Image (cartoon, rainbow over all chains, first blue to last red; front, top):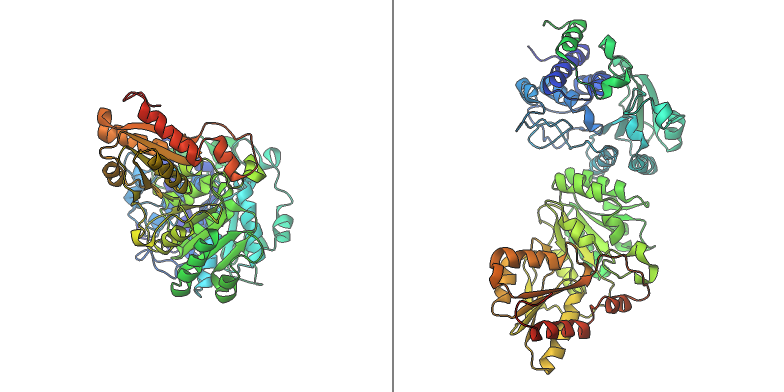
Length: 270
Length: 314
């Protein structure tokens, strides 16, 4: 399969990989990977200035996937963009594989930071963005957060700091699929009014349909001397009808039959 | 001691553009010169230790060498997971300058004491753990840290502590300094207990007992060779720490003795803080006395072990 720069095709491939990886590894978090697939596809096809053949390039944009439980999707996009061979994905979660269940940086080209404990990524991205600004580099730092992660106090510390310092080259994307581990975010711990809170913290707030590639692609230009948060309204399990907006796909792993049905829906030859 | 450390950070930053300072709402005027002369590398953030550790990690990932300073207990317990995951897992050169370790903040009560900081930092892979004994040693330590790989914890004492370190001994992280040659007993101290050990050794000398003093300023990596060499021929070792007895200097020394010398090891007495939250508050000295960590008490502990039958210690 050739590499693609078409974000729609890239998102489809991410979803296909995620289904196969979570089925094979009997792993969780397929729903969260599917909800973020379009965001990751747009970032890696259209937004981030990164080089697969030079992952440590000093002037690259930094991407931190703070929602580390969606590791399968990040590995999938990195493999599709050529950071490492696609066949690594077949060993996801296996003994001695570099690809751990949650995002792991060790031995994985293109991964900036290991995550999995929530509430770390935005602080890391703050430091990366401040570092780039202090050194006079034009690089951006982008952190992808989950909605459940917005419960963490450290996340709000970082929102407060970035607004105060007007870190214009910092971006947060919230994958707002409105389902966390125990139930709907509105029932577990409501974040609303989310846009108003983040705006009050000194951020540009852009609300988009998190599956609309054009809208996502236009959301990452620095402006107003403020950091920008993209509230991406998404559907958990997006792209596989029987997984969409269903709580059980936070933890459930697709069976062989479910994998087959999912791949068929994604137009993937079995 | 804190001023000696922060002055050293300023000096390093003047000549090395990778060095940045990160504080968490420190006292007004802290590091004024640094702030005025290198504002783009000076970050005084709010009371948000978790976030500043993550931010320092992000800066280090960008190639900077952050020196982060705040009160010891807040720099360890409050953000332990960030220290573990962001700093240690990624093995980043972030330096934690922890003000008021041990019972320095005794007047403020138990919320401000850092009596387990060395143990919990020591438990983290990649972390180097140090506690200089006086201001000149704090300076020597900081000046030697720029290119040290990985994260570093520096426990800073109260300030105005007796100066017992010597220029001619130099300083190297991970290399203990034998301040006094032992004969009968070896005191092993860390941080400000080193000066108490020296005073205890003076008292014992007057009684004809030859006590040596080893300044174990680096708890991790522990200088095993230096310890074993200093311990050669002594009847007993007494470790002295302003810290819980769970997992600190006494534990580390005991582990080495057991593992390397087994039944031939000298008797070991560990002095420190028992497994309690200190109920008393007041002065650092009063609390140290309460826990038996002042010179006379240290000397008495040595006499006790030396007059007991071999192997009857502890």
